[in-house]
Length: 266
Image 1 (tube, rainbow, N blue to C red):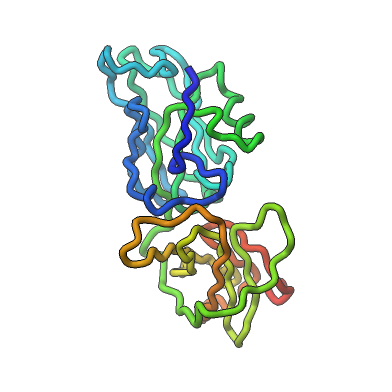
Image 2 (tube, rainbow, N blue to C red):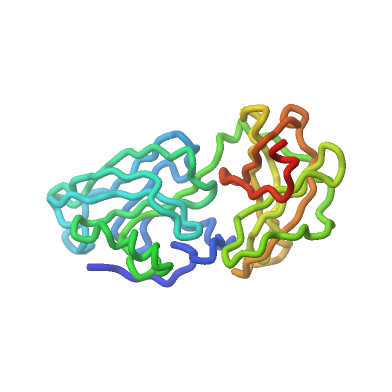
């Protein structure tokens, strides 16, 4: 049967991840027992999606023994399409195991694997295209995607008290924007996030010299229980690291930023 879910921690149509979701267990909340290991995975490395043998009383009606299931891997942000797929056969005892690589173009942060029976293979694509991902929910599990920590170096923040640059008019704002300046070797980065500030935090020091690959963080105020779901921009001026001052592209959380001036492309 098809399962419906209204929880914000599964798939967030507003492209936001609430702080309270970050501690979610990697096991499927509907009790189907699907697990992703490791719970925090590095881009380009493998994850193992599995389910242990199920007791007769553990009913998960889409995982019928002997059926071939499609496993889809995607970001939880902004109705993302499947970035990686594979097939797996459910054993007689209800168990299965499959290995998938974490794709190089996936957004950093929370990701989801979904296990879909053959008769419903088009369901998630149709629901995502319609902007109603909760209309088609199958068992799966959440995990976190990151760059290898030993490739990240802290950025120097110049200021967080800066005027908001003029952003292009759009019904669907981009995830992030970049504007060269205001000072020499400075860059203004605008990141859309929740009610808690989203700021550039580190950069990937192993990236090519002409590419500045930024990783953001969400600043949760002391004493706050979490962050509101409102979508809002946060502007920060950073110092461009020495080894990347000839950058021609900027990414935030593994997604391209939208350049707000031509300096980025010169």
